[in-house]
Image (cartoon, rainbow, N blue to C red):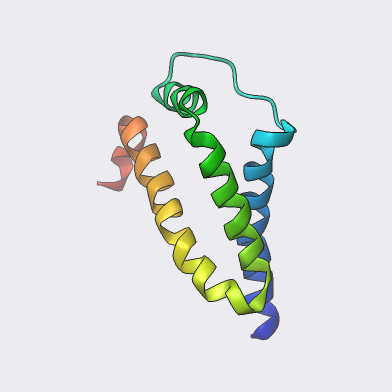
Length: 101
């Protein structure tokens, strides 16, 4: 069970660290502009300066998930991030989510 907790923490931490550091290192290219609301929001966050804080928050929470002492707090901090991602994608792609009903 202990190994399962460590594996789960690393599986949650890796995307947060990689995608958070992508803002600063630019490893993954941005998707082409197709006029979607998600890309408009991303560009608004980038131009407004909010994306720096979001990226730093992802990196810090990802690093906190790796260490056992801060894993519980990090998992609580990560929950609103994950829920916001799910609800944002739900709102952007409402017709694709209609199978839920």
